[in-house]
Length: 177
Ligand code: OFO
Image 1 (cartoon, rainbow, N blue to C red):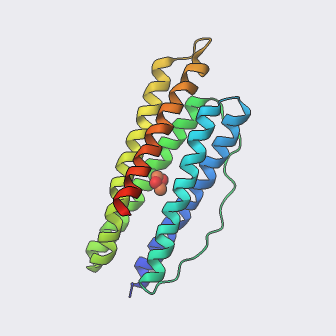
Image 2: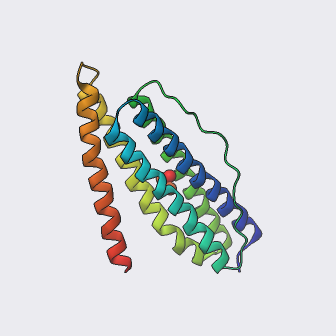
């Protein structure tokens, strides 16, 4: 059994994860159109990950006799000024999500809801990793700069970030198998 307040807060988190999934999908599409295939693939992967984060909460809510609400999703932006702006926005969104997870943890303590506290530990760690990943990508983009061939090199770097994210995902799936 879950409190009404916690159910509402988790449903809010569902909508944030769903928005992240659509947001990153829109970014992937823009990168694709700009010929940045590596960045597009990375963002497609992130978009799928965010949907999985949403689904985890969906399943958790039904497990604890709550009601998961399918969110309506605001239209995300479709175009961006630069690849740097894309990852600045990713970083901003990840910080917002971390803030929201921290608020949820705060509610757990207030309500003595140790089941949900336990469930959220995975998100606490995931957010640390995702914020770090976004910040590292941004640093790399700034380091490469805006010279003639910078987009080519940035895109090549994105393949490495994708491979690292996929490897981390596979390792986690192995642990859970
Ligand atoms: Fe859902 O992990 Fe970031 O936002």
